[in-house]
Length: 272
Image 1 (spheres, helix red, strand yellow):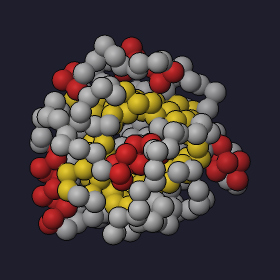
Image 2 (cartoon, rainbow, N blue to C red):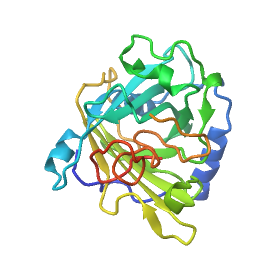
Image 3 (cartoon, rainbow, N blue to C red):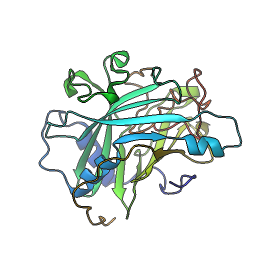
């Protein structure tokens, strides 16, 4: 993975994507998907396993700690999804994750992929669940709380999936912000995320101005049987706080722009 976030080009703001997002996030969680595309299967494969920012932390001029990220498949017998349990902690403190989420992967429009974010009813009870054979087996989507407006929409461009939140609808009250944006890039080798918070007048009030948090894969994710051709183009947070797909929430990250507990690596706070 590149050490700088250079793939995403800012929040997607076209009317088509806004309509697609609104339609997708209002669909019932139990509504079965018609089918999964090759791109959706590939993205879900890449969003499986364990990742670390250790290399980025070691290369930083500042004294920072690394962050560990785990993404475990859950509810694999369901027809919707795929679903992932996300757990994130400062390296060396696996028993004290500062972020836990459930992610639902979807394809609301052909070629447009979405990461929907859900909050656990009792994050403490799920600590370490990524190591289990059947994580969160006692739960179902009906037990989760959605984080509306903060889904990430992605498209495949060659060997990378990249995208962002849509416009300015991801609410955030952290450090005087009115909304948050998140940009994400996912490859077979890891992922990069970059979150920022803005005041109502457009001033950036939290998050890095330099680039994203770089997570390198440390456990290989299973690849699908055949690779598809590229398409054309914790501390629990409340459901009202910004949400996203794959890395720390801005109010939870330990880079100085979020949580005051624990100090960690990365030039950003992560995704909302």
